[in-house]
Figure 1 (tube, rainbow, N blue to C red):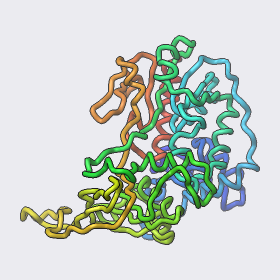
Figure 2: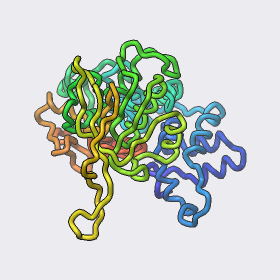
Figure 3: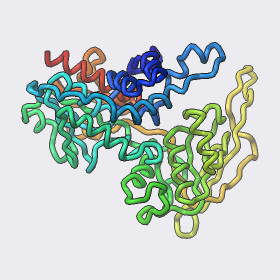
Figure 4: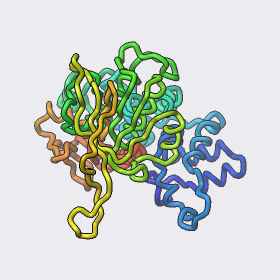
Length: 408
């Protein structure tokens, strides 16, 4: 339980499953987590690593898979929650990702009138636009969001706060507190020569284009997304792996390139196994150095070098370094750069009073979560920089407590 950022009573919900009480297991998870079906599919599962059985060398328990089972099959049998009395103060939440929606649900349960503002046409944030549907089906996500709506939470889409409505205008609408939960959807740039060529995408952009396209579940065709036949994906995290697996579903040849070993990848081992079974070709210990151009100024290849461990300075410490004379070219016509992302603090551009840190996160008082603007809070990746979805959900719960304490 200490490994779970949400503090879910894991032994208790597993005990319910052993006794055949699937609805009871679901209700136990829902006490702490408003997205059990989502977390059952994509959670990084720190609880599994913290399990005592892993230290004893015993077979580990698939806690994430058990959560998915409880959520998918216990939901219909679980008792419906009554809507809380929504007569409290009005609170505005900017962003409908896992952080914003969790904070909204928690505050609504405490009796506040909560309105969530989302810049896109549908709520969900990274869960809808930054993760492929084969990992989170839209129907599953919509079910989770509709349950939060059932608490009395209002969701206003196509509302880009800072642009269509200013932060000052929000405060004049009788909102007693504002929570900024805009996530971390700004891609990181790696300064790779040739990154401005046609046929180069960034991971977040690629996922968003696919998720917003009208496609079948298996992504057989994407008319409005020009993608070549041979794709190189640069990166070793979940975003890179998702992009690679999408490429395979589009019927392309996909090579995943990263400069470390497979064991150092920032993804669960099972996800790597899935990607290989689907046809993704892994190229570990490889560093891209230049995207080559064809005569039409589109991608014509990817120049790379091999990497290896070596004691370069005689200190006895082995480090990853470039192998001399190891340059080679991978024949590709599309490159997806997915090396990470930065906080989406764009709202601060139109609010000079909002102070930011050097890494782009919003500056907050760590004791109460308040930004440099009184009554305006920040939570999730826009406050903590990048992190897993389970961490974003936990940050939303914490923000709800901070706002509740502030208003009381």
